[in-house]
Image 1: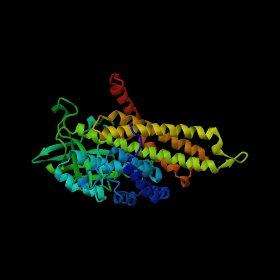
Image 2 (image 1 turned 45 degrees about the vertical axis):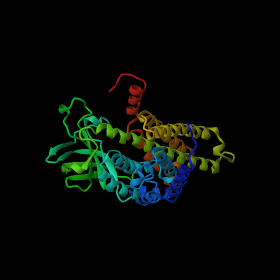
Image 3 (image 1 turned 90 degrees about the vertical axis):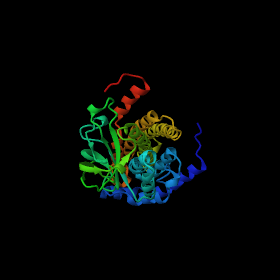
Image 4 (image 1 turned 60 degrees about the vertical axis):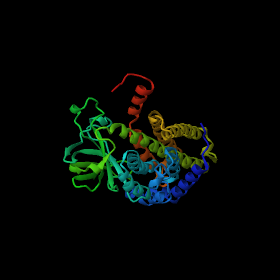
Length: 390
């Protein structure tokens, strides 16, 4: 495996770092306090051509791949946004870009992808339900046939960035469980206008990731047209998995950037802070070792994520690698931020040094977009060949 970046990749990373630095930690601290969507940096990302790195050239993208997207997200996240920066890519180039570019019609691609790449159209995805959680196949949202379209009824929860979105990628059942022989049949993806009559949503008060609203979304007899269908009617499960596995890659990249940012803050502080005899605290192994350990874990997650992204770009199976990378990255980022806060002592608790925001935001990703326990279930069953446990 060649670990050297191409000149083009180096240029993209540098461009991402410049954008990220222009909207650094203070920008994100202000947004977090106001619970405001990061529209300025997202527009700057789009203007710099960094939104569509993995989207088709004919629709305004760069025609590259998930590896380049991961590299860009790492640089942006490390510059100030932390793990939440990865969510911007999750809702737009993944939920919108992957679903449309891989499974949309030619008309959907022509209509939606240029707007996504330019920052004029934002997306979100409505998948998780209150009574199903990680057990997606137990979803109850149902689109019943009506003429040449459908009527959708149901409820979703923990849906990211709904108020800012133009389109919602909705996952619903179109056949009842008793109508299918396989539980994965009868699931369909639709791309619906957020302001469609019958759609309403309410925000959820939460600990962190305050710059992207989380909402409960209600679908009350919502009319779906044939043109809203994304992918294959009744056969959307495997297509959805493509969206979810690429979601893992961008989530991991954001976590790696957050962990690296935290360690950098801690290292800089430890070089200046002097106590008990005038030596900088960074000279003590009790401070060095936890940060070095966290760095080592982040680097391992980083390489696993690159392998998952490379396999994805080459058309190979990459779900296991993406899951492993996300598992280790969430743990490593959490440890990196925790140890960085401990290095700063009381100042690690202060908003001035940004670590408390990184901690609040990164904590989400130990159970989202897939919980650690579900990843371990997957590894045990699919990689180790052990019996299904749930």
